[in-house]
Length: 191
Image 1 (cartoon, rainbow, N blue to C red):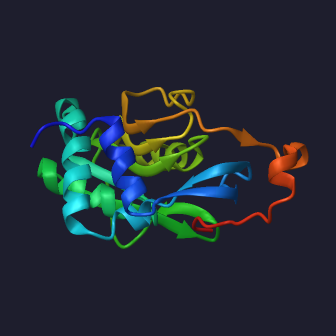
Image 2 (cartoon, rainbow, N blue to C red):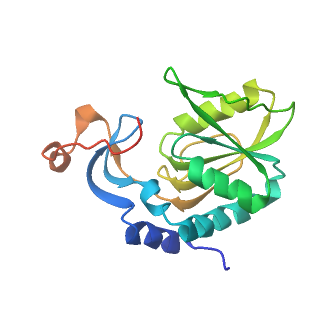
């Protein structure tokens, strides 16, 4: 299987209806004209396998032993990347509004860990997941994401890869352009 180009990954998102156009409120609180609903692209296991293989190929050389994903968005792609690399998979989930490790998941001191997420805009959930890894004694060796909406603008301090890197315009809710202000805002992501 040859490596996927960004254009091929974008085509998958378009074909599956996962790239939405309109007026959206992002998890970060910012507003945007585009929204990547990765769950729609990740409904079909052949698509998951293909995207997971593309991300795993780019992360393979980092020497990780474990993949962690923030729930919900990163679960499907995180597990597939771990499967493709033959690594252990764990996830962080919300408890009282914060991501935490539950279900008996543990990290060994110095355990080399990859964080895998679906979409990154400002990097808040990825940073929160990295902080969890470090607080439990693990070492974050890299971050993988399906979509980097910041086009590389978020500095996570570790190697990172994305299958799509775009500069998607975002707006403060108090400073919306006229075309967005007249459209009803939709919050399609997870809360």
